[in-house]
Amino acid sequence: DIVMTQSPDSLAVSLGERATISCKSSQSILSTSNDKNYLAWYQQKPGQTPKLLIYWASTRESGVPDRFSGSGSGTDFTLTITSLQAEDVAVYYCHQYYSPPYTFGQGTKLEIK
Amino acid sequence: EVQLLESGGGLVQPGGSLRLSCAASGFPFSSFAISWVRQAPGKGLEWVSAISGTGDITHYADSVKGRFTISRDNSKNTLYLQMNSLRAEDTAVYYCAKTDRILDFWGQGTLVTVSS
Image 1: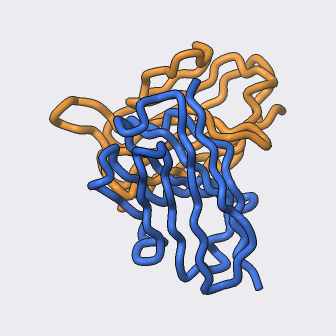
Image 2: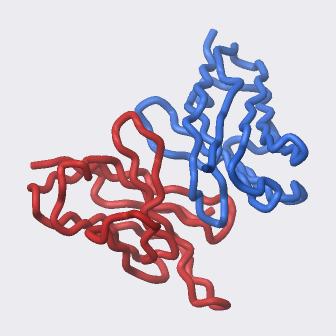
């Protein structure tokens, strides 16, 4: 099974500042057949259902603000939130859909400093 | 508008069984895989199972393999999760999610509590 490890477990950032969350997979999730990384990011606000933010490691879902961006390839990935807003307080999860079982990271809790 | 509505959750004793349902609308149901993801109280997301649009391909997490069975009835636009030999650690909110490789739309979830 592919293990997804996020860091840090929690993060406090000031409003308007940058937040960076790392996600590492135990094996490459880059497909050589289509050169795509099978990595998604989800946001779960308190009391809400998870929401898709980013897929293919760097493609923003429709309607997601452009302050959210994803990067990385192979085994190392990053979710960056530039200019943090109060409504970005949430738990963020990375998720690999390269091979079953399709595992999640343990989550990173983002708070306002 | 895509809608996914889970049902069937509740309180069950350890060793017992429960069947969850997920009623879908707003998209061509048989054209998409559907997944189950669960979240224990105060914990993170755990992928549980997925089934292809035609129902002929299924996948399971190691933690539920041999105890849970995913199935679908495309004539009723409904997904199922038959859960047997339930354990306390299966206590969680169970979400169904429309799956186009990515889990692009989630239901609101149904709570399963395994306790004596």
